[in-house]
Length: 241
Image 1 (cartoon, one colour):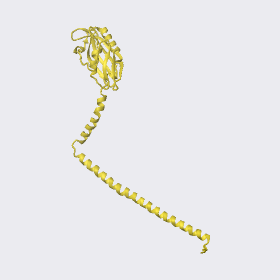
Image 2 (cartoon, rainbow, N blue to C red):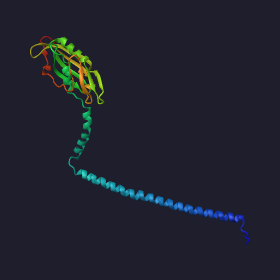
Image 3 (cartoon, rainbow, N blue to C red):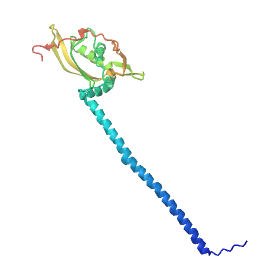
Image 4 (cartoon, rainbow, N blue to C red):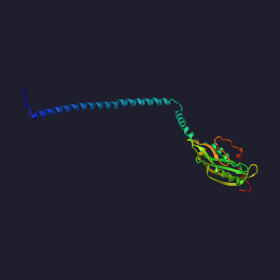
């Protein structure tokens, strides 16, 4: 059978173009429907689901606030809880000032150059120590006292258990040196001696194991402190200011 194509080529191209156009239009409509659905879903989530969730969260906050308001002295309780969280840090940073007394047993000279103290002042911010003292043996006892402070070394172990050594004191100096009369009527040399103690001496994280000096011990376990180290401040001698 013989078929004869009577449709011109131009007509065939037109029909083909119309078919392509129809497919494009249908595809565009399909994509548009999907896009509209996606936008509608997103709008539903934003304006409905999120609104509901926000409302539920607000209600939960209001209920929680109402429960808290039932407690008496709530602000005081919260303040105490906040302070309790800081106790551990404060304890780790506090200075072991009781070591001052152990230190004195090592640096105070023994008889006949013994020294008695009337006041001891310690500045925890700067580690400065000021001692008001007096000595029957005069300048010899004072010089020995100063030299012992100057020459004393401490050995300590830090948190890593590493042993180190450092000078006990720096900036050692004396002032207000004069003669006076103690409660027994003896002539004594009054003085004020001041120095800056090593920070490790009072560090809670350092274990002070010993003080290397001519005659002394400042281990953490050495707690004895003779009462003979202390005496009332000597009075002025009449005619000797």
